[in-house]
Image (tube, rainbow, N blue to C red; front, side):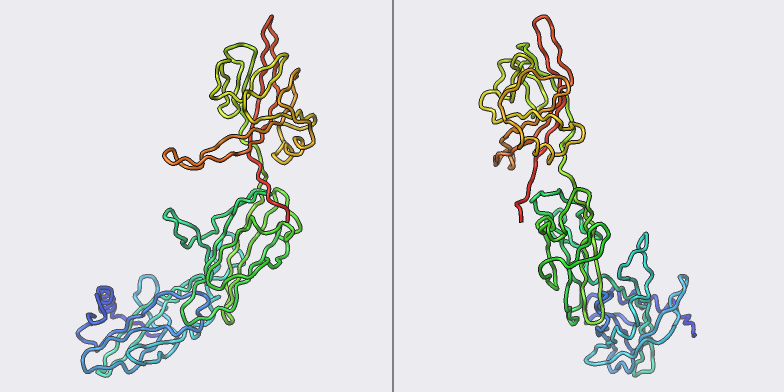
Length: 415
């Protein structure tokens, strides 16, 4: 193995290449007949049969007679050390090309995942481009070729553009929620590389992989995973973990990306405390604001106190109640509350409530989905649950204290 010690000249040459402003303005060392500049510094795992071009620049009357590719085995403190020969480049029309298949397997790179997982490996080849010219001079160009992913995740950035990302950007979607949850992929290759297929698969709770329904484009794709029929997976429950895997194939080369998504429960928001009484100063209440109001309030109140120890819809408020004996306030999710509400008798007032009573209510509110300057109101149906925590009887006064929480139940249409 021969060590090249002309490091200063090589570094000067590299600086000259970096400062080139056009194809017709290339600086070259005085004592050499030309220089060779790679036209790309990266390929993907799919590009193992790609003719990688390097443009040849020569002085007047000089031609490049030979261009060779070697491994660069230099240590960190060295500029280059010529290692094993990779290939002779083909010279044509001022371009020297070598086929990336001569680099050998792209699986030589270490698996850098923590912890290690079964992923296609990426990395870099440290190379030397050794060029010989008709005037008898030679140049040696250190060159790092990066081998990247052949399929990548895409996510939207702040400008609304899809950009490459390390993950799918999606970690969960809600059970039975029809709201779109999209993941995006794109394949990466040189123009001359042909992709045969992209295959989508799923696995539930680390089980075997099965095919996803539909076909997948070989360039880029967007998949609404919340819209895939639950029957595809044999049904889903909260807590299930679905892994989505996409494999791209080009010739004998493959690459893969995967993402694991947890099926989230539909739960209530945080619990709040409230109270309502027969006092004129606190006879009305709003679940939206969590505040009590006096008897004259018509702007905020959603319910009012009724005797003895009861509540009722106020005015035109679209709200009704179901007493839900047996429903656990502490653990109930929106599905359990919906079941209790559907099975019970719906009323607009309840009296004689006792400590521990649980009530499911539904209230429709007009919500602005636009802005203050350009409002866009839509009706939203909220599901709430309350539990009576105390009832206080005075000589003439009555007060109910309770905790409550709300949520919006989203239910997909049945397949």
